[in-house]
Length: 205
Ligand SMILES: CC(C)(COP(=O)(O)OP(=O)(O)OC[C@H]1O[C@@H](n2cnc3c(N)ncnc32)[C@H](O)[C@@H]1OP(=O)(O)O)[C@@H](O)C(=O)NCCC(=O)NCCS
Image (cartoon, rainbow, N blue to C red; front, side, top):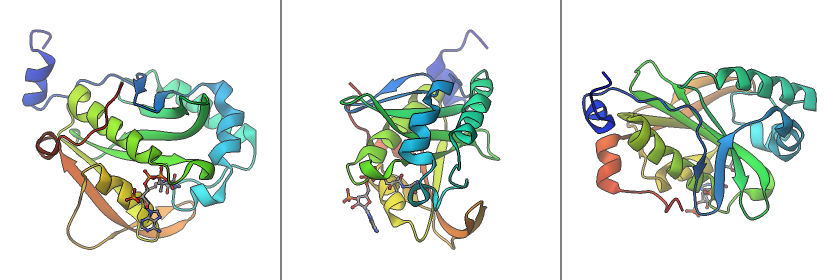
């Protein structure tokens, strides 16, 4: 398949997985996590129940727990289809959150997720990170569709999806079992065609 250009492969529905490569936006650097990020990740968001309340995982109780997750991710970074970025605020160099994308039952569709520390909420940061993720997944990887979901009780996350041009899937909410309880979630999605039509993304440099 080497004789096909990336653009042609994407048109034919093939994905070109690149792994968690470094990405950049106006205010942020998105980069792979390192094990040495454990203390900052634990202190800035992973131990905070305000942040983890609607996530799939429970707040960490020790830096060691965070370190174990980061060690596991180091192994998973060997796979080109593993996407988990740390969000760095360029201005201060702080590690303030994470953004990622995971497989769905449809190999051409990936599911996006994100979170940032409480101190940085309401500054448009997750919107900026998700916009960059969408650009990467559609234009670099060649995904045909990206989905994201949020607990109904967590409308700020749905607003992030809307600001990035994602469209709420009609129909009922879906129940999602998390380590923090069962939540009814709204599903948002965006196809590559819709994305290109809207051309919604932030300047990356
Ligand atoms: C939800 C979260 C991702 C938002 O990130 P953020 O960087 O603060 O988001 P932004 O600043 O880009 O945008 C937030 C939007 O939600 C809106 N918002 C905030 N609280 C809201 C509420 N209770 N109801 C409706 N909208 C709300 C804000 O006004 C803003 O929209 P606007 O720009 O139109 O005013 C962040 O708070 C977070 O990390 N929460 C914990 C983890 C989490 O819930 N992750 C998502 C799991 S699906």
